[in-house]
Image 1: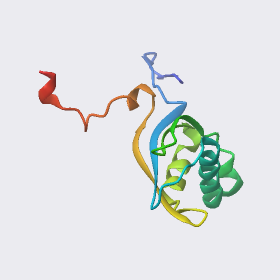
Image 2: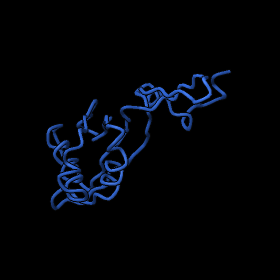
Image 3: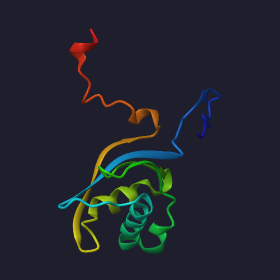
Length: 126
């Protein structure tokens, strides 16, 4: 986190995220078993096809991965966040298998991914 000071002497704390977290799933037209190492390789390959070596040098970490459903949580440095998002959005195949990465949720903190206000039922809470 970074903080900045205004010129008039008042303190203004501006928090910028060092990392972003992205909830993603991979959809294919046929069931496949993709281990976590292969999934990371496919993500880096998507980054490389769009941005070359600069894209492949982005430190993308898979924090959580469900092999059966291909759902994962990625940790992405803020400096490469837009590149990762665009590379995953434009990826259309894993080798010869057509696929699509679905980006479900994005947050500046891991805690922000724990709840989704779109899925929350306000009637049950009262």
